[in-house]
Image (cartoon, rainbow, N blue to C red; front, side, top):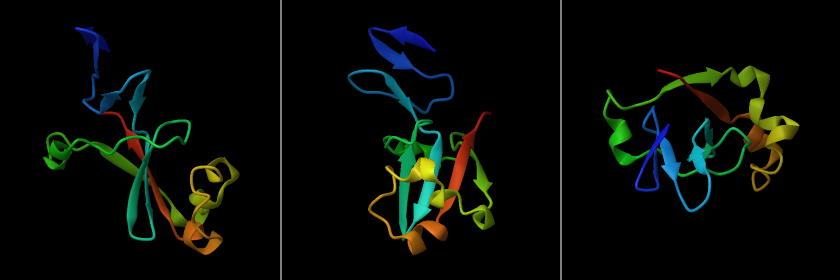
Amino acid sequence: MSTDSGRAIGTQGFDIHLKGPVMTVQYVVSISGELLYFDAEHRPAPEFPHDADDADRKPALKLIPVEQKPAARPEWNDALSRFTPEQRSSAEISEVIGD
């Protein structure tokens, strides 16, 4: 990652610079009709840029099998606390993978 005039420029195009550290979307959670975005520490992260819908800019995602109930795991307790256990057990979590 390089900087230009104090702005972070990510190598994959999905690093988002806010005041403070750069936040990178690592997980996309589909739960109860919502898409939520989280960094590697399961903290909320801004959604992908709108031009990420372009096939050339869209990140590759790897779905964690729903049978493993990934959203019901303890590491997601804080991030998904507003959802019921039933909603969490049927949620889909995808991990953003490199180019």
